[in-house]
Length: 138
Image (tube, rainbow, N blue to C red):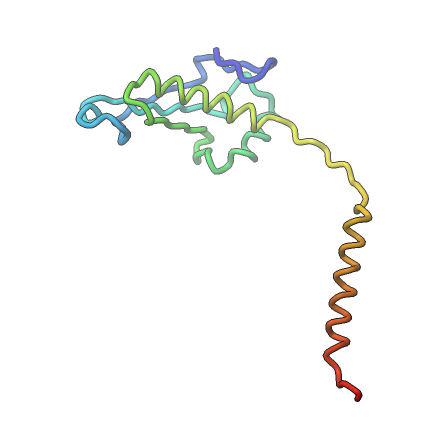
């Protein structure tokens, strides 16, 4: 069971792991062991997510979801498969928690008087510059 938030947990049977040969550090060790770990999570078939959560995840993680509706996350930073698996689970946890967080409502505010003054001063300066470009009377 992977805990995403205090309310949401993803059961282990909804997550699949695939291992493959890594291109990361390890020298000849890389050529003989499958240390890259890829986490596969099927958003469409998940029973623990509500429809609104699924829609929010699909919108926010659109570039990470394949055509089958699966979220794929890979890690090959470490030599050990076990450490890569821990890393990919942590990335998954952070990614879902960030994507499910509701955005803050924007409160409209007034333009500060200092900004208004600065803008008007700039306009006045530009106006004076253009005014001084005219013909000079002696």
